[in-house]
Image (cartoon, rainbow over all chains, first blue to last red; front, side):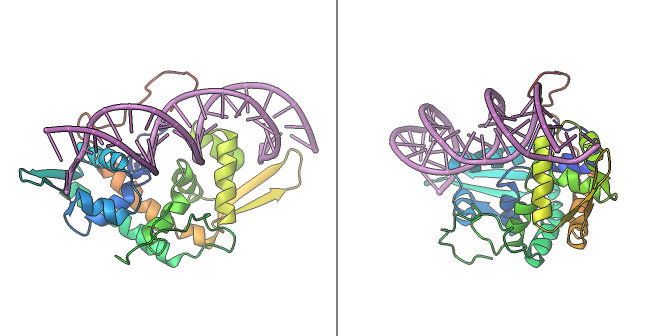
Length: 120
Length: 120
DNA sequence: CGGAATCCCATGGGATACTG
DNA sequence: CAGTATCCCATGGGATTCCG
């Protein structure tokens, strides 16, 4: 799709449009993370999806993937400089989201079952 | 899903997560728009989808819907104050997107010119 | 004009099992 | 640990038609 590729908003959407992408970026903005780190902090992402999104970000030059030839294997993901620049957007989203209160009845129907650690 | 509803980023995603939502907001940030205005400027949105997204934004208190009892009918959509506050995010996205250049080969595979059904 | 109603499909993503 | 490989499903969204 994309009717106006010249529009910055549309182009940004192609990058952070995925369901998990912004959350991955949020985590990586906190520093280098291993695959398992991300998997854990994100909640319920399938390894398939996580891999896909990371690979996409890597292909777009926003994330680096470093493999350490060890046993057991270790792979670290980190933001490139370009990736870091997405911080403005993520920060804006974090600010807005933390201030906004959905009108009663407008919340998204939540599955409500995440046994989470308060990592943030 | 949403594993951490307390995270602003996640909450924001519930609002602008839809495929067309940010583009609708981009347009509305320019001022009041009619249904047909949006439909036209957005490109190829089905009326169904456009209606759905607008209704959602309305339910979330971000957009107002004003119906004028005329013939032919006229319906105008505008951002509420809360909706306006999303401008920061959209602006950040516009800025980032207009600066970012996808590495060769990392662009999203564009349909290019197939006037076929299911143009995605 | 601004939808509502249908029908249908592509795609993203989930669950699970397995491996280098 | 960090993925692959499969299989499967939900759902968002597209196209079309009709209505007040």
